[in-house]
Structure formats: C-alpha cells, structure tokens
Amino acid sequence: MNNRIFIDLDNDGKIPQLTSFQGIVDIKKNGRIIVKNSILENIDIIPEDELIYMLKNFKNYISPIVTSQYIPSVDKMKILAELAPEFKVRFKTEKLGTNSIIPISSKEFFEGERLFKEILKEIRTGWTELQKYKYLYNKYNQMLSYDVNTLEYTQYKNIHEKYSRNIFTAMSKNWGICASFAAGYDYLCYRAGLESQVLSEEDHDYVIIETSEHGDLLTDPTFDSVRLKFGMKSRNFGVSRAQFIQNGHNIEETEAGDYEIGEFSNEDIKQLDKQIGYLDEFGGEYTDKYIKEIGNNLEGTNNFEKIEMLFDRIKNIKYAGRPSVYDFETLIKFILSESKDKEFSEKVKVYSFISEDRSELPRQIAVIVQENKESKRMKYYVLKEGIKTFMEVDKIEEIEQYKEK
View 1 (spheres, rainbow, N blue to C red):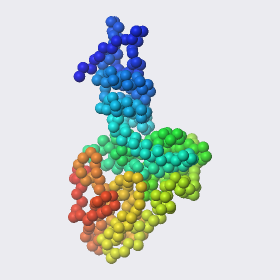
View 2 (cartoon, rainbow, N blue to C red; view 1 turned 90 degrees about the vertical axis):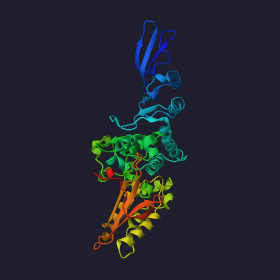
View 3 (cartoon, rainbow, N blue to C red; view 1 turned 180 degrees about the horizontal axis):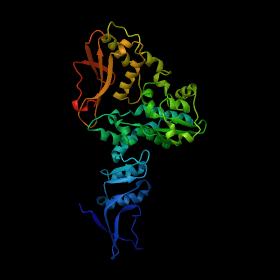
View 4 (tube, one colour; view 1 turned 45 degrees about the vertical axis):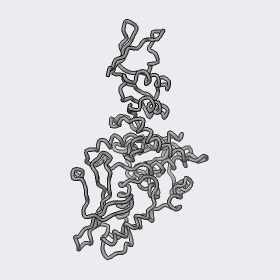
C-alpha cells in the first residue's frame, strides 16, 4: 500500500481540517505537504465532522490502530463502525501506567455497550442517587464474572489479561478482573450522572462513591460478584472503614485514607435492596442463611449418596444475571465450607478446569468424592446440560498442558 499522500494547503496556506491529524509531516517549498505513516490520536476530542473528513479522505494512509485519551463517545464509535470498521481503538478504562489494554474494534465496543445500555435503561425515574448507586452495583456484579483464566498457566493467559482490562470486551466475554470490575462500575456511575472514583491498591482496584446523603462510601464490586448473583447480602458496599479493612482491603495504599468514610447499617442496605427490586428476584429475603444450610442434614449412608442430594439442592438455587462456571465453583466451595458434616465436606474436592483447547477457554466444574474415610473408592462428576446439572463420569478429561502447575 502506498503510504504517502500529497495534500494541497488551503487558500490561507494552512493544512485543511487536519488540526488533530497526527503524524510525520513535512511542508514542501511548493506549498504542498507529505503525510506518511500517520496515527490518528485522541479521537475523543476530535470534532465529529473532522473525524468523518479524515476517514473519508485519508483512511488508507492512517494506521489501523487509533487512540483515545479515555472512553470515546458512542457517536464517535458509530463513525468508526460506518467508515472504518477494520480499525481498532486503544483507550484507557482504568488507572494510568498499564500497557496491557488491547485495542478493540467498533464491533467489540458495541457488544459491550449493548450490555451497559441494558443496565442503564432500567434505572427508574424517581430513584434517589443511593438507589441508583446500589442498583448499578448489584446489576453490574450480576452481569460480570471473575476471570480465573488470567491467574492460571495457559497459553491464552495473556489474551485473557488484555481483554479483561477493557471494560467493553470484559463485559461481552464475561471475563473480568478487579481492574475491569472497578472501571466498569465507575463508568456506569459516570453514564448515570453519579460521582465515583477508582482507587488502586498495589494488586487490587475498587471504587469510592460520593453521595450527598451519606458522604463518601467504599465499594468493591470484585468481592461481591458471586454473592449478588445468588441473592446474598453484599459485604463490600457502604460498610465502615474498619469493616472494609477486615474484609481484606489495605486502604492506606490509596487516597481513601484522606476521606471521611460514611457507612450503612445492615437495615439501610436491606431497605435499598428492597427498593431497587434486588430482593424481589430471590423471594423477598437474602439467601445467606439458606445457602449456608444447603450442605447440612444430607441424608445417606455414605458420601456418594450425600453428594447426589447436594446436587439436587444446588439445582434449586436461584440466580440472576450471567453466573459463570467459576461463580458456581466458588458457591459450592462456600456451601461445603459451611457444612457441619466435616466427614463429608472434607472428602469432596471441587475445582474448575479447561475442557477445550481454544482461546475462549471453556471451563467445567469437576467434583471428586471419596466414598467414606474407610473406603478409598472415588466417584467423578462434571457439569452437563446447563449450569447446575452434574453427571457422573469415569474420569476427568482435563487437558494435560493446562493442568495446574
């Protein structure tokens, strides 16, 4: 492809409509300029008519990777989708300094935008700002799952890491890490006209929201993601500074140390969850007590009979949003940890594994059960026919190179 183009200057001797057009530019003595290997930067601040002009006239001479200082507007992405669908955009959706964000196409952007828009359109007229904050927190957590693939050794780990760091691809693929949980919630708050800020510890991101009634409140979408898909009470929304630290946060590494942190009582949070309809999804009450008891009073003379009863109970668990295999793995491990039948729970191993060799890395849950402490006989189960049905198998078909290192 010819990467050089001569452009006539206008009548005043200036570059026509190219003030935001970045590249290597040489002005020739004959009143013409050469633009080569040009990069289109900061499309979020380029006027729309100028962006249209550049793409219509000079697309073949622009690098297919364009940049934006922050998330470009939907209108700018529509222009790219129409005039340069093969172009990809690199933009920040989290803290500065990272080089892991992958450029995405306008198609990938709109796949995520569709899901963000679905969340935003359900905000009701008349809701208070607190109700909006809690609704967005709950709904986003129900729609995004933690991407355990970024933590494990696979040939696709870097792919997942890069896509997880962009909130639009994280949302569409349901691959998220703490950076995308925090940045996505912060973005939804921005789109809803609410004040928020991402805070970054050394290895973790979360969000502080700025309310008029309760002051600044600490929130961590990542650590409430599983709970809110299954009707449990959030543990990291509007709790006290001391409770937030007890929940595993080191807030002194962030600007949160300079804030006066407000807090909700349990009753305050419950009233919010009722008002926004969260509890209606689960019969009107939190499911914490119910889920904690699922692993108790299992009838059977051995662990094989008890695991079958546990599977039947798991089928009846209600959920909302898009729980992943990892969400169910985490939930089942929690159920077993709360079981008073230690002879049973200690003989059950639950984990997720990669079942096919492709970049999407589909996972299944594996359950291995020992008959009892006297018998070494084992049974093996994997998820089949949807997210909550287990099937006995002769062995676990885990791909050798993806086994835990």
